Amino acid sequence: MGYLLNEIVRICEHKKIFKRNKKGIETKILGELLYHRGLSYRDTSKILGLIEQSSYEAVHYWYKQFKDLFAIGLKERRAVALDETKVKRCKKQVFLWTAVGVDSKEVLGVYISNSRTGLDTSSFLKYVLRFCTNKHWFIGDKAPWYKWALNRLGLEYKHETFGERNAVEQWYSPFKHRVKRFWKRFPYHSTNISILDWCLSYVVLSKIWRFLF
Image (cartoon, rainbow, N blue to C red; front, top):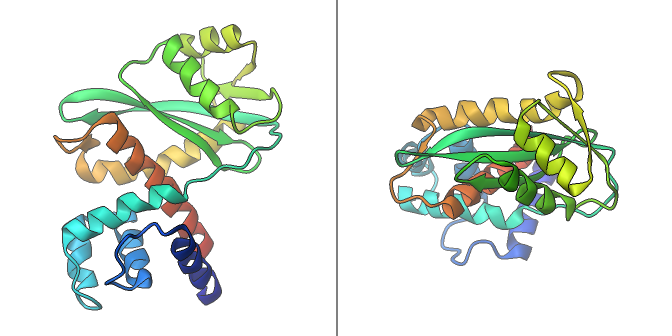
């Protein structure tokens, strides 16, 4: 695990995701993994205080910076699983869309929209296709917004309730558990962009957690 942690530190330094380095990068990574696993910003800062004094505002800032490590390679993919879920921005309901490579289990894209229509689906699919060199199978449920958008873009679609669609369901399960800690409601000053940034950081830290543990 020591080698992997050193490699993550090296990547953070190379990408320069932290503009200030008064705190050790190892401390920042530890703090964000604690927050990622369910602690609040305040509780995380209290635990980090045993190592280095860190405010909850700093923990919040560090978490947002991990979004800059989200990167997807361009390659051929056999199948991609799709799904969406509801989250709240203040009192308003918005939709989080996710695409996961069936074979790699890699999150290929996340997207936030105010509605759940064929046009929203089409915008999301166009984003995902940027990371694919071929027209592969898309796998999802029977929702009409998928069928309309996929037909419009000339893409192959397969309906599955379980099976290979589990690739995206398995990603959503821990995500939903995490956001339930704040009742699936993002703070009152949140925007669609800030929610998307939070989700991208979540994707990156999920990958780091799997590498380390």
